[in-house]
Image 1 (cartoon, rainbow, N blue to C red):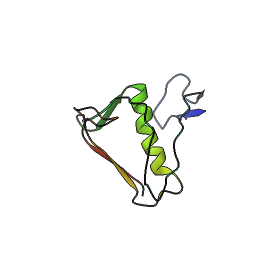
Image 2: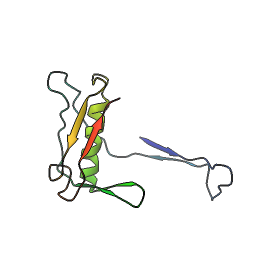
Image 3: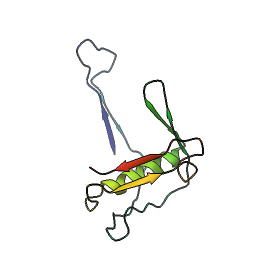
Length: 108
């Protein structure tokens, strides 16, 4: 279940601004972090491209690719993952496309 909520800040206004939207979304299954092996994720094989926008990082992907990226984030967020646990995602290696920037996901 995903809850999305946004309350208007001062000066902001739109119809339904204080509504809360509830949505039953996809279920993602991930392995627990294994201290002896590190982060391991079972991927669907989707595509994600990470690029620079004008003043931001842009992450674009297929539904499967975005779920694959989420799996990496969830494995690193596991309670058994120590601070500093990280995964390098390189261009042309699932889920990143050949035209993507490389990324590193790190647990604080």
